[in-house]
Length: 455
Image (cartoon, rainbow, N blue to C red; front, side, top):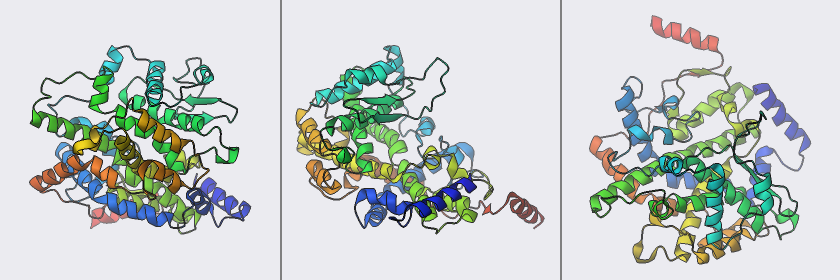
């Protein structure tokens, strides 16, 4: 795989005289000369929140697995975070939820109990868009989409994706949907792509794309921020009224649980999304050579995610290539952009819907059935790429720059709680250097272990 990657980089340099390298081609999508500086500044803005979450999670992993496995001041061993790439941590929420006695907002059991199917999940998503005065899906969408894993023996890549066949209204989704809340959110994400396709269909072909790649990823997630609120889940009958809802302490604790569950997926993901393309930009620009592909990946993982490999690694391994987007040559910084701007969009749409009056908290906003919010969103989607992305952003947010302030506002109750809890327990914020090694060969690692034992 390392050899194939090296050949790909060489061929691109040979065949693309208009661009210095593949990094320049990918970054050209954002039409902003200082785009990389903007991303770096966003990470500086986001890092304090991430470090508080990291410290809290590390403590609970240490309590579960012991000091020998999880160091009090060290990076977190990646294999303990519940995801193959440690990009999201939602699978370990069960043993570290701040207030486990409070009502869970995971509606998966109720979805199963109420007989939800993949089709019903997508119909629910369509109804949300229609409630905003946006487009229903064309009949061909329901006829040609694949919404659950085929049972006829066909071999299919199950990674969810949305497709625009550039032929009138032929839009489709391919997703091996499972009836659970995670896939309900994924359904809204993919339907967001399709809604974008439909809204800019009137544009010339060259403009039939998102204002930038991050916009396309953000649209469905904006809807999911409303769909996942306890208020909305109760409105559609998937979450029962809590008997203790009138209790202010219980309400506050339930809010912390809710935001924590979201943060394990949204906040934990941010440094991973950043380092994925930092690694590739360095490869494309020749700063990282084939002799350092794997070790450079783990250096970035330690620097940005505060994680370390489960065991020592070498350049005979190629861990980053286990990620679909690496081997499929799909740019990844779009997801970092999306996870920032979706909160800017959310705040702008919530203001249009009148949901933030009297200092109402951003995390409680649900824009369901607000045609004012829907019309505002539609006016941005209809631009496609006919205007520079700052123009499109200004339509909804009144801002022309990416800014993580709305994200920090959304998670402010959780961040305040995490800071207080980490101070109470004396948790170290940040991480010291990992004691794991990454060398050229496994043979070198073997010799090092022998030497270490002898000494």
